[in-house]
Image (cartoon, rainbow, N blue to C red; front, side, top):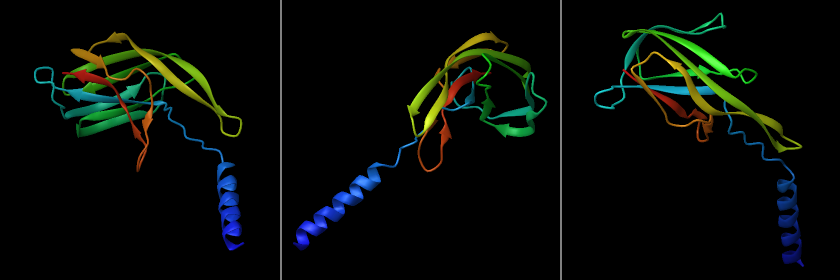
Length: 153
């Protein structure tokens, strides 16, 4: 009888635990950009005098003496972003276009907007390479934005 009561209690806990929705969101609206040496392909720390997204009043970075990467927010209600980089290599503009897709996670969790199909519309840098054309995060101890674009100087 005790065994049956124990099994029923475990079954109850299992069923109660299964009713909670798993609202894991993997989409991101932040794009990761890394800087690399055009000759060696190694990660490159650069000085960023100013980084600004056109149409935004805020400056994303200013007077940063050394960084290997930046996070660029994208507007899910838009289809492109224009970023102006003032670095030790000069002033360069990067214009990227993208698609937004709405995905239903579940009725309980709702929907999430995914940004996909990143593509170059204009580029003033020496070279860029797309590593991941969809914005996403990597789950772990802390959610980490995936590197999407590599910029070579």
